[in-house]
Image (tube, rainbow, N blue to C red; front, side, top):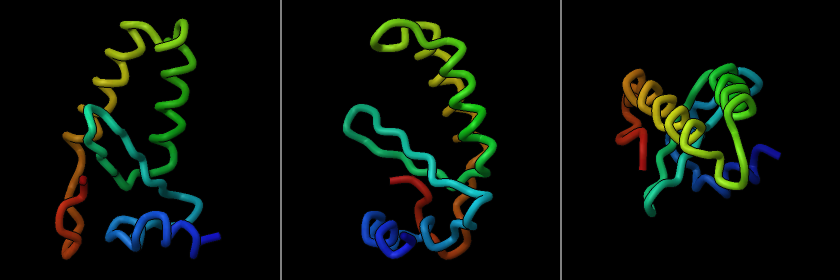
Length: 90
């Protein structure tokens, strides 16, 4: 239900820009910090595919963690702050 998501996300600027069925909010929580990106849905599928190929054991292993860091570094490089939205990440 879209209203529930608006409640969960606090009506954040990125959530308001989300195009249903073609975009997603991609969140990453590390070291007590949460980053949020509005991305095309295929980026999420790419991430899942990479992790399925590389994940080993309980915590993923060094190779999966390195790929995850590289993936989010690429997302960060391509990220733009939407006009009037303030910070795109929190």
